[in-house]
Each structure stands twice: as C-alpha cells, then as structure tokens.
Image 1 (tube, rainbow, N blue to C red):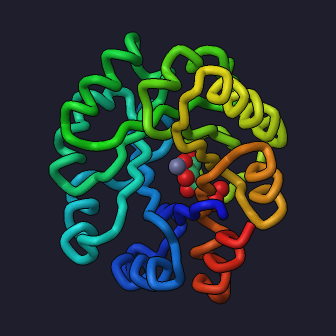
Image 2: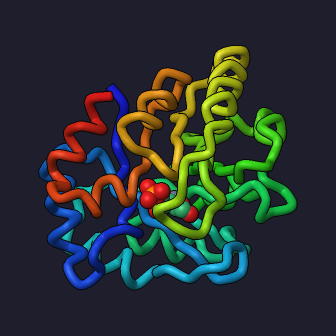
Amino acid sequence: MTKLSPSILAADFANLGAQCRTVLDAGADMLHFDVMDGHFVPNISFGVPVLASLHKALPGAFYDVHLMISDPVGYAAAFAKAGASCITFHVEAVNDPAAAIRAIRGCGVQVGISLKPATPVESIFPLLGLVDLVLVMSVEPGFGGQTFQPGAVDRIAAIRAACRQQGVHPHLSVDGGINADTGARCAAAGADVLVAGSMVFSAADPAAAVAGLRAL
Ligand code: DX5
Ligand code: ZN
C-alpha cells in the first residue's frame, strides 16, 4: 500500500486546521507542507508560523516539509523547531548536497532530497544512501493544479533501480498532478509515497479521495 501525503497548498487556508484533521482522520499518512520563497520558484506560499500553528493544533501528525527555497540550510532549524518531521530540499538549490543533508539532519529531523523534472536523476544517485526520502517532481515546482509530466514514471523506476543496486531504501515520493491514474503508474514504477493537492482538497469529498489514493 502506498502512503498518501496530501499537499495543503490546495487547502482552504481559512479552514486549514479542520481540513487537515479531516484528511488525517480519513487515513492520510502525513501532511505535505509546500514552502515557496518567490526566489527558487516564482510563487510564495507560507512558512514557519503556519507550520507552528498546525503542529500545535495537530501535534501527532507527521509533517512532510517540502522546501522550494534558495536557502534550505539557513531555514532548516526554524522549520524543525516549528514541528517538521522530514525536511526535503532541492538538489538544484545547494552547492554541496551532502553537506546540506548533514546540516538538516543535525536539526533532528528526517531528510529528503527533491529534483525538478529536467534535473538528471543520476545527480542524486550518490546521495541515495544519505536520505530518508527522495521526492521526484512530476511538475515544475511552484504551483498546484498542474498536469502530470509522464516522464516522471521512468525517472521513478530509474531511482528505484539505483536504490536496489545500492542496497538502500529511502522512501520514494512523487509530487505534482497526482490522481488515481497517474498515482497508480507511479506506484507501479516504485513510488511508495504519493503527494496530492488538488485531488484531495478540491474533491467534493476529501475523505473519500484520501481513501481512494491510499488504496493504489
Ligand atoms: C508544487 C508542489 C506540490 C503541489 C501539488 O510545486 O510541490 O506539492 O501542491 O499539487 P497538485 O497535486 O495539485 O499537483
Ligand atoms: Zn510539494
């Protein structure tokens, strides 16, 4: 069974706590928290105070924090203090990814690495044994509601194969344009965590959407 990480970017922020509670009660395994700085990506979302408030309201949840920011190491401690469980940064954002992994892990959280659709998968192969999670972007990061880029399926399979070859087992997550069809294709290729924003929070029945995606 795949794990589901609903992206709260698609939630109604005026009812954020209630909507998060709904998806967690429906079986969501974690909450995906998309941080954008208007620099690494051309959009701004939300940051540390929002995570701190959510964590206070829902302290038992696993917070899957996706930093789409230019200085992930500089902000990692603040997100860890606010309640992050896993902090994922972009390989494109840093000069020394291994050092960034060490620095973020030093904040007492799990660490994930993400890559944009055009970044060669081989660039993260040396890092697979150092991280808890690999987040494959199946859209250009920055906005919810985009169309899934089908090339992500082969990229997931290639990363899964490299993990197998290296004998390492990070979670393999996919983010962008995930619905029942694309989610199933990614799961078949080796993804074990599906991130879904619009499919969950724009659904007429978010709880039913969670159950459907978790069954893939
Ligand atoms: C995009 C974000 C995604 C986004 C996914 O930059 O990283 O997590 O919220 O949204 P959907 O599922 O609507 O494509
Ligand atoms: Zn994301």
